[in-house]
Image (cartoon, rainbow, N blue to C red; front, side, top):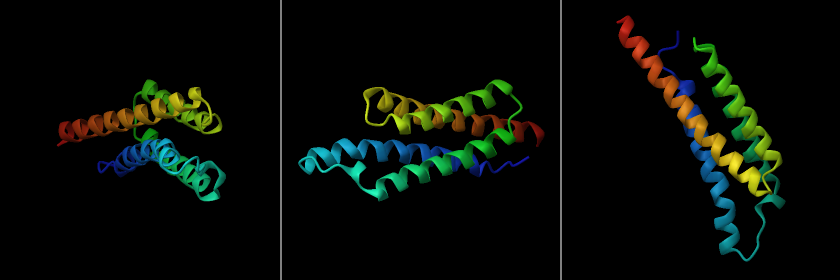
Length: 123
């Protein structure tokens, strides 16, 4: 068992940076008179990078989980996050994105907490 849970820490940071990334769009648009970040390839590359890091973190997190409901929550939430990328120009996509990224932070934190308590119980 991986007691370090670096995958959970990376998942938390990746999801938090994903939220910051998505909040940057309205901020940049507000201050640049309509400059659309979605027209630039590097913005899409950042989205793909967050998805890849998130996939890695979820995949490694579920390897160390004994609760089937928690595994299902991780993968379901990650699927919603991926779907939100395709709907990012809509209000529904925005809600899905912020909700899924926030829930992934909670799930990784819960997994980190459960892992630390299990490690303390084994010590």
